[in-house]
Image 1 (cartoon, rainbow, N blue to C red):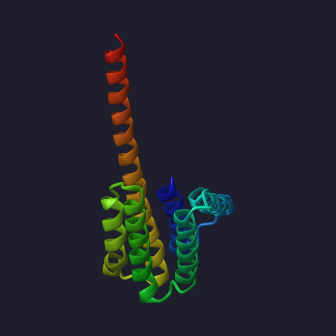
Image 2 (cartoon, rainbow, N blue to C red):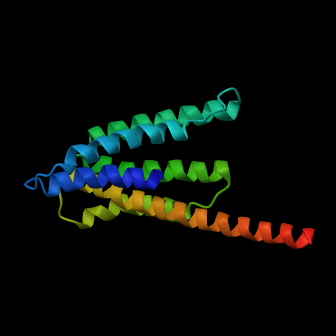
Length: 167
C-alpha cells in the first residue's frame, strides 16, 4: 500500500507540472486523496509498541525519515534532493528489511537507481523528483505484491499440511 501512496503523490504532482494546461475536476480529488493517504501511511507505519526500546527507536527513525522527506520535497528543485530522496528511501527500506527479516531487494535497488537514473531525462529537477517518487513507489508496490503472493503461497501450503495431517 505504501508504494501506491508514494506513486500517487508523485504522479499527481508530475501530471500537474507536465500537463498544466489540462484542467479537470479530478485534480482536487486526487490531491485530497493523496493527502489523506499520506496521513494514513504515517499512522499505519507508526510503531504501536512505544514502551519497548525497539518501538522507541522505530518511532524515532520513522519521524526522522518523514522530516527528511519533507525537507527534500521542499528543496526538490536541487539535484542533490533528487538523488537524496532515492538514497534515503532505499536506506530506510534496507533498515525495515533487516528489522522485519524480509527481502525488499527490488524496492531497495529501484529506489537507489531511480535517484541518479532520472538524470537521463532532460527535465527540470522538480519533475525529476516526482519521477523518482513514481518509479520508486511503483517498485515498492510491486515488491509488496510479490511478498503478499509469497505469503499466500506459504499459507496455502500450511493449510494443506494441516488438513492432510488431520485426516
